[in-house]
Image (cartoon, rainbow, N blue to C red; front, top):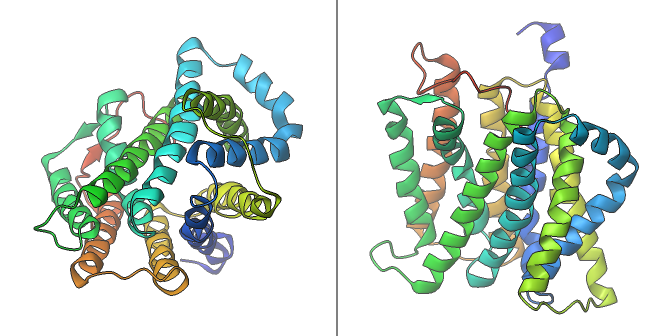
Length: 311
């Protein structure tokens, strides 16, 4: 790498944004004991929309320029990958520990690649299984302190977290359908703007109480801004100047920070097999990213519908 390339490289920004995502449990886990899950999600989206409101006219112009198919994809990103996924993710914290829901989000690239094969025509080679199998084995070890004894609460928390990961991965794939016509900032604004009414509908459908104590607002705002909007915007900025292989390694700051926060700040205790699971998930996803950049025959061949990736 030349001196100029080092100056332009923003791998550190990808690592910083990933570390900010890893602090999510520090704010979200305590909030789940104070507020209903749907209300937390509504408030997160409301704070982000309020901050991004000056950009709403620009986002509306971008929306009007989309085709019908692209608008459906954008609704999928906002309603599914933002509102519903965040609801499932938050619910997972009410069922189990503070580390597992976060680390299981590292499965997102595996879901995204599989969905890209279905929706974007990308071809998956059999070597894809070399990365999927150890990642799933790691997820199993991570979820259950005793891998041979499946606890109902642990299984429920894991299913909610994996459901969120699948929806967020779906948002990545659907985002590719609109990324050619929307810049990352406009896509982010539309994501939250569509997610907010969806989150409100979920709250209404579940009979959620709308009462928020004044003492809860600082944590709500911090949750929306630090592991939420700030991390997302830093990630987009860093990703534009970071090679995919380096970005994959930098994103390991996410599970590493999540584990540190869970153990040292929230007092979580992990069995040795669970730490092995963390390592397996991180290693499998990192190996996939490095493989796709360096191997002569990648595990995934882009299809004709695939465009640049938008998380």
